[in-house]
Length: 134
Image (cartoon, rainbow, N blue to C red; front, top):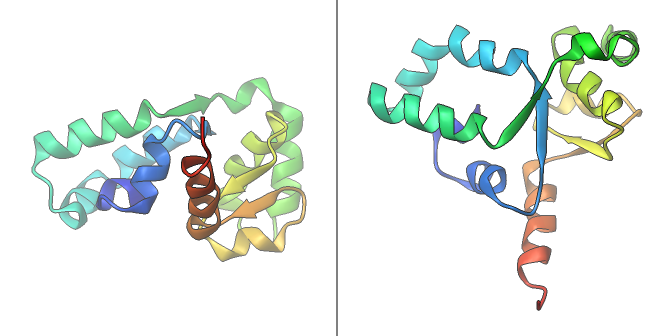
């Protein structure tokens, strides 16, 4: 959601071709749930907000976790004491056997199942790709 609020490193990472991003399908519902709050914080008009939201969501492959009940159960167990509302994001990583998750939520670092990359860390990786000769 940070990518929606301002045009900064988070948005640049999300739209880069250096990475592929995945999220639980519920992310789309989160955008709708917090639409009014995000609209106000972003300072975008409704057209720009809707356009930016759709553009950003096209950069993320939304995963239906109903197809991965084992991953969802494992993530729920891991995140039970850490942050149960964020278990679906970990479940996507488990289901797709990803190397890590991208989050600024420090509580994710309390789990050790997947690596957690901050904006700064991911941006450093992104920058290293940009500086490599073809």
